[in-house]
Image (tube, rainbow, N blue to C red):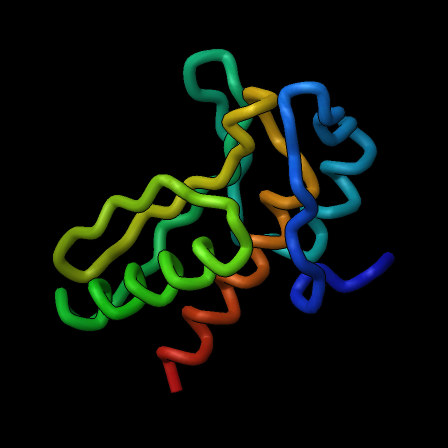
Length: 116
């Protein structure tokens, strides 16, 4: 299985195939702290990150946003005092794509960098 972190997001359109159940199961092994939730009939990856204060949460949000811009793939971010909830899914296909798992891995790496 190819590591997700060094990969980049592929352009995705409405006719791109969503990840299959088998692909989801394989990819999720690399991002075990993420939950798969259903929202409005669509599968999303979601994780809540905890931080010691609002400033760190805000810095994390900014860095995730910067990476999202680089990759051309954007999450839902809810920034609160001491925590950030991140949700990834592919709007164009109304579900999960490999890009979402790549970005979840990159989001985890950003959180790890901030923890140092």
